[in-house]
Structures are given as C-alpha cells and as structure tokens.
Image (cartoon, rainbow over all chains, first blue to last red; front, side, top):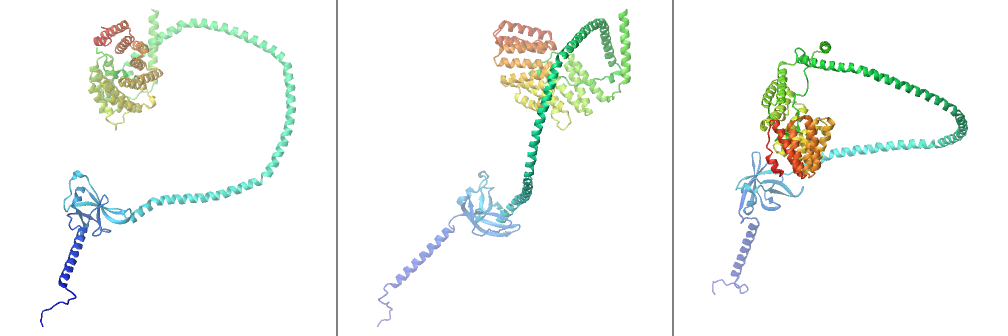
Length: 320
Length: 286
C-alpha cells in the first residue's frame, strides 16, 4: 500500500481547473478596475484650476464642470480658506485650449431654476492666452429660486395694488349704478304727468295759432295803409334830395375857396419847411457840441451790418 | 437881405427850442469812463470802415474789444468781436476772423445776448462758406437757424441767402432757387435792400446753373438796379460779371463782352482792378 495521495477519479485535473478559474476571476477584477478607472478619467490627463466662492452651498465634490453644456471636468476638492471656500476643478487637458485667461465660472442649474447643479464656464477672449495650472477663475453665483421669487414679488406688488384699486373702483361703480337706476325709476314714474303737460301745451299752441291768424290780418291792414301813404312820402323825399343837391353845390363852392386859400398858404409852408431844415442843421450841430452831446448820444447797433455777400469771400471792398 | 434875416430868425428859434428841449428832457445816465471809451473806439472803427481804412478800423475794434472785456460788457464784447471778424475778412485774414468769433462762440457760460450769438454763428457760417468748407458752413448755419426761430428774426433774409449760396455750392440749383426766392420775400417784407439785392443775385445764379439764362439775366438786372441805388462797387461789379455769364450762356457774346468791359471799368474806378482775362477765356469771348 503506497502513501502518495491520489485524487479521486471523479475530479481529474482539479488543481488546473481551480487555477484557471482563479486566473479568470483575477482577469475579470482587473478589467472591472480598468473600466472604472477609465470611467473615472484616471487615464486622462487633467489640469487643476481654482475658484473661490464666499459659500459652497450647492457645490459638492464630483459636481460636473460644463463648457457650452458639455462636461469638461469636475469638482475635485474643496478647502476652507480665509474669505470663503477654495474649490478645485479638474479640467481635461484636451479642453483647456477652449478656456483662455479671463474666463469666468458660475454656479448654474441645467434646466433653469430646477435641475442638477453644475459649474458652468463662460470662456473669455482667446487672445488672452491659455490658462495655466492652478490659476484662479472669477466666480459668480447665479440667483437662487428664493431670490427670483423675491424679485418677482417686488415687481408684482405694485401691479397687484393697482388691480386692487381697480376692483374697488368697479365696486364703487356698482353702487353708483344702483343710484342711477333708482333715479331713472323715479323719472319713469313722472312720465304720465309729463304726458299730460304736453297735451296741455299742444292745446295752448292751437289757441296761439288762432291768435296769430288775427294778428296777420291786422298786419295786412297796416300794409294797405302804408301802400296808400307811399306816394306822399315819395314827394317829400324828392324835396329832400333837392335840398341835398343844393348843399353839395354849396360845398363845392366852399372847397374851391379852400383851394384858393391853400394856394395862398403854400409859400408859408415852403418857408416853414426851410425853417425846419435850418433847425435840423442847428440841432445836429448842437448835438455834437458839449454839453449836449452826452444827452443826444445815439443808441444804435454797434455792429457793422452782416451782409450775406461776404460769404462769397473772393470779393472784398477796395481799400482807399 | 430879408433871406438872411429870416435865416437868422429861424436859427434863433431853433436854438431856443433846443435849449427848452434840453431843460425839459430828463438827463441821461452818464456812461462810465471805460464804457464811453469803448463806445468811442467802436465809433472810430465804424468811421474808418466808412473811410475804407480797414487796418485802422481793425485797431479801433481791437481797442474797443479790450475795453469791453475789461468791464465784462457782454453785449459790447460780442459786437466788437463780430466787427473784428468782418474787418479781418476784408483784410484777407480769414484765420484771425474765425479767432475773433471764438470769443463769442467758444464761451457758452458768458451771458451773451441770443441775437449776438446768432450773428456770430451766421458770420462763422459765412467764413466757412467763403473758405469752401460747406459742411462746416452747414453746421454753423443750422445753429444760427435754430436761434432765428421760424426765420422770424431780422437776420432771416441773410440766413436764407447764405443757405441758398450753400445749396448752390453743393450743386443743388433747384434748392438754391427756392431758398433765394424765400430770401427775396423775407427781404422785401423787411425792407432790407442789401439782402434783397443779394437774394436777386443768388436767384439769378441758381437759375443760370439750372440752364435758365433769360430768367437769370432778369434777376441780375434787378440786383444791379438795387446795387446802383446802394452804390456798392463790389456788388455792381459782381452783378455785371453775372450778367456777362448769363449773356454768354444765352449765346449773346457781344452783350457779354459789353458787361465785362463795364465790370472792369467799375473795378478800376473803385481802385480795385480785377483781371477779367480768365473770365473772358471761360466765356469763350477771346
């Protein structure tokens, strides 16, 4: 009888099979690890840049960093520093060329006010040059929903107040309408009395028409009387016209006499004109002599006349 | 003898009347010494302009301007600055003429009367147009026009005339004719004979540029008649030159040559001979 171990015939090559299984399992673990590392971007070279925010509310490690809505990195670390929180962003190197100096970062949500939080990068001008490792970007927080609601409330409050006023005015108008309706009702109640008054008025008009007929008859009688008296008046008018004619002749004679008189006055007027001219000369001389010259100082415009002819330029007055 | 006596009597009456008037009139407020000196210098300048001594006139207006500035008399400062710009332009010193106006135009804080500012702006527009700077002229003209609200001011005819000249310089004869006609109406309603003659001349130029030689000659004749009455040799010369152009355009070379000869006679007699050779060549009269 031998001491050597002999595996049972039911499990031939068991050791080789176990080793193969273990190797396969190890290969699976390594592949899984490689996939996870690939997904985590461990094989991708990344550049760290920083932002400093007064508070890190809503920001967490692993939060995606987006450029034009495309994920280009993630939040890799956060540290408290004096004045806020220093947030480190790991950006894939292949995208660094699109983030020049002067770019800004801001906190945003993917679908307006609701949705996943992200850090969004707003690129600066390409002329500024590429961003270097460890450089800091300016950061701005977007408005939160509470701030937006507060802003809306502040803007809507005056509109609501106006609406409230308008509604109260409508209510008051309703009160006025009821007053108007009651007044109309009172007026409607008085319509029968008005109807009776109108009937009385029509009867009075009939009577007035009868009286007017009588008046017209008397006017007719008067006109007949005037017709009879007209020839007498015409005779008297002719006499008056004759008198006026005589007066005109008399006036014509008077005018002729006045003309004669004026002819006599003409030399006197001529002499007066001469005297006035002389007086004018004396006045002009006196105005130039002290002490009268101050009293007669002329206050005309002190500027030379502005003549549009000068706009032609080429023609100047001749100097003497 | 009786004539002498009557003359003496008239003089005595007039003297008595003058004394009475002097006694009756309230004494005017005496001018301050500097103000009186400025007014005298201004009056001397005006007298020298009338005498044709423009250099002397410029000195007088410079003195008047300095005196007015020493007492901050805004109206007198502006008036003398404008006078200086006119006289400098006559002396051919266009740059100095512009600088003189800067006293008024570049000082918006000083309370110059609106009328003076408008006069200064119009003068500046004229200087720019004389230098063929039409855009500058248009700018200053629009400023003056804003002050001359609805063209109701006394400078409206001059303003319209400058606008007409500007339109003509910009090759817009139809606009120039319309503006010149407006200037004719404005000048006639105000009895401004000088500007009426200028407006008639501008109207003639616009019509000539529009190819209406006969109507242009009629307008120039009107301008010449007024300028004869005003007795201004420069303008008579200008009217005759324009009449020569109009006659040449109408094909009447003899008449054109006659007008040119008259123009030369006028300029020689006025002591300002101008060579008409180039114009003769331009009008194909040689």
